[in-house]
Length: 461
Image 1 (cartoon, helix red, strand yellow):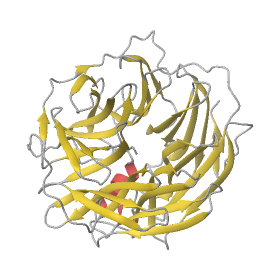
Image 2 (tube, rainbow, N blue to C red):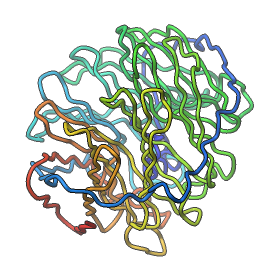
Image 3 (cartoon, helix red, strand yellow):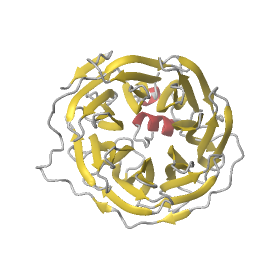
């Protein structure tokens, strides 16, 4: 998740209608020490000339992915939406997300939901954790053989707070904490750092400029979940961190989205995307923004083996607003844009959630595509793309239905496989049906032979 920002339309629907991400019953620390950085507005990205291939040509294809197994998990008829996954040291899988009632109109009691699977996708245990308010998880990483799970919890009377808990391999909670001030804070991802600590990013309204719009929030924590330092970054409007990755020697790249208009809308916000290159103390070394067109959103970022990085998201640069396309931005070893790819002509609302790099230097992208044009726009499909190292589209597979099916997060496993997680059968319309009978969805694939996928299946090669 990596990913909120997401970013995750159905999670946001559930988050705004029912609520989002939060923290638990441990002692609540006071407001973190905060240093506000207000950089000059990042240099804008200029849309490349028409000679630059944004919708890349097909290239010679490797073998398509084949499905090893696929599973869906339902929590007693609730609406369940998975947000992130991690592989444990012994090869098991931990998946986190949110579970809550359906329908959910204005305010519902949602909880964080964690499931642990073995390498065959068989359920080992499940845990539902909440406070009776609006709680959810959207990121999981490892702290040794324990699991660090972050999200957001509603803490009365403060509002939404960052929520962090450490969980043992048997599913017992070791400790949990909340962080925040007297307004809303949202956390989208926590990652380990090379010095044995952790970085957490998201959005804060309590700290920073405090103009009521929110700033990008970055917090460094020690292995006990204690704050080492906290920083905010004001990019000029309603700002929030969307993803974070270690990069190079003691540096990081933080992606962010900034909303400038219609910010409470799911489909029609005006958003520009940025990335910040940071040193080990969170100081800005380089900043770049993308504001060509009314809507550019970053979802996830990973480092690449050539010393650069690659970012995925959605953009309306080549669409009639508010429609959008899947968007890939490749950075070189200097954190400059090496190439950019926009994949359009799939559906009206397309976007990329996550990306992994393959042994041949190419990529597999998890995305969504709304291929059926219904009046309610209620038909996201799972979309998996295979790219070569230059970002050229080798093959695509789209499947799903009859409602919203989204592959929100993806990892490569120690046995060379790929596991994607998300949700199936979520409803975004009509309002009195939101979020529908959605379930956690987990699929494992390998890079061999032909791909077979169930339900509605389309090959766009």
